[in-house]
Length: 125
Image 1 (cartoon, helix red, strand yellow):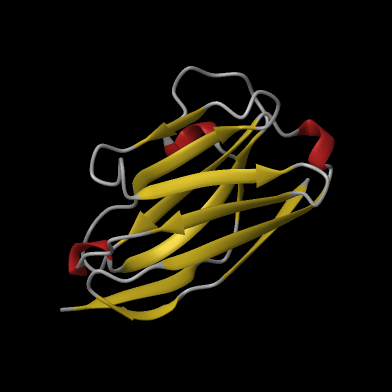
Image 2 (cartoon, rainbow, N blue to C red):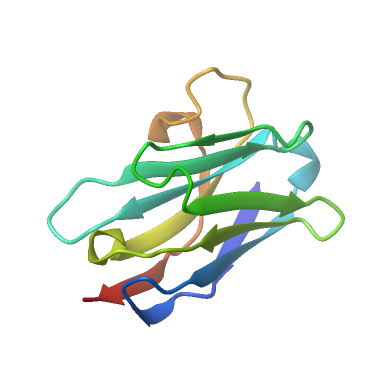
């Protein structure tokens, strides 16, 4: 099993920046990739970004492309999400997730089997 703990959420004004971090522990050697998802009030959870654990290749949702950057530090077993030019519509609970299978569908929740508890991001207008 892999355990995940997010940190770094908070309140920020529109146009501002936040950096989220996710620390992984446990059987981290089994991780193929890490993703960030978010869930706004009254909406379904949606994919935000993904990074491959070995190659560092990245993939982003269109809504955050060019504003968010996902990165990882394998030595520390952490994955960060740098969020710039934040908009009120980015307000959500952000979750990190780990997948331990090979897949082409890195934007699908079903491909991930470990989830963090979530961290709140609120962007005021």
